[in-house]
Image 1 (cartoon, rainbow, N blue to C red):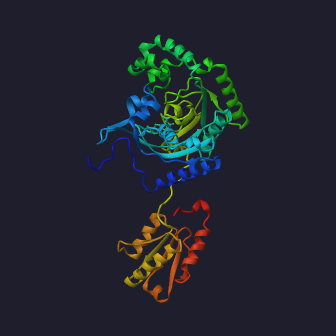
Image 2 (cartoon, rainbow, N blue to C red; image 1 turned 90 degrees about the horizontal axis):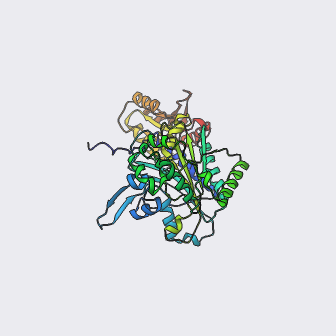
Image 3 (cartoon, helix red, strand yellow; image 1 turned 180 degrees about the vertical axis):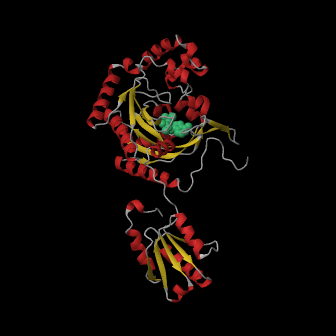
Length: 430
Ligand code: AMP
């Protein structure tokens, strides 16, 4: 059908878009406080970037990318995540020459050919941060604490922070071998994809969405049991910093992130309020990625949150209050002359910074009042030929029902004062 949107996509309608704007405002506020600068990268990239940056054995690369050949014969992919593009931009634009650490954030649409369900879409939006140039445990803790702070200020409670360390290229082979050994004995229980991944990258099995693989991995060896001395020390320091900040966490030695080359710290924030999709965000260290993209060896840590899941969780926890998008002032008129005068007044009000509207459907005064009531308008200016002759308007406060006559000369100043005096909780957004 021509009039239906593609599966897994969504329209954000007036009434909902205000929640998004509020969340985006919060993101920008928090990023300013924590010292992150915004970066915007293209929505599509060369496919090779994700193959190398995300990893060949990941679900994203194996099954979920929107990849096509463009008219110039290049393989192009709609970005499925934000880290690889930001790292590419960091290298390509020589941001490693800037004072370190470089702290960046992004907000934008991502695309994955996922199976759509509640909280899982094919076009969704992520907010993410990336820190380049520091491998200090304190920066891991800062990034994690910021993620937790963000959730709290978005009004979410009932969250769990899962924390793990995936080790470095030195200790990772030990974990790989232990996991391969463990899953070889359970090969028959695994999904076909995981059977195939068993030798190539057994860690991925821990991240499989299939129930049978989750069950098979319940008692798998944990990465925390395989850490080398240096990684174990780093992990201890991260935990100590979090303790100092009073950020509580659950150690989860089987937590694996969706990208292939995570090193060291990995974390995920879970909620019970998005239905089956319990992860609302997560991240970790990925120290080899800048080098893999052709830059100098540079430590990097970051995370990404799904905005749809944050909004969904907020709604379930009753934190998101729907707002009317109608302007708070409406001019209702009766008679042709009053209509013409109102049209001029409308623009006068707007130029004075007052969001206002009027009737463009030729409705009767009674119908206009009914509309104003339904649209949630706060102040209605009523102008009929009689009021016009006397040079005034009747201003009705729709919340209290009270009304007053105000001269047309003074009505803009009068309304500005009224709007200012509405308590913040009752205020509509312009
Ligand atoms: P990931 O990049 O897979 O670690 O995902 C980070 C976050 O993005 C998740 O915790 C979700 O909140 C969100 N996310 C990932 N995939 C989807 C999807 N298909 N639909 C909606 N949100 C998603």
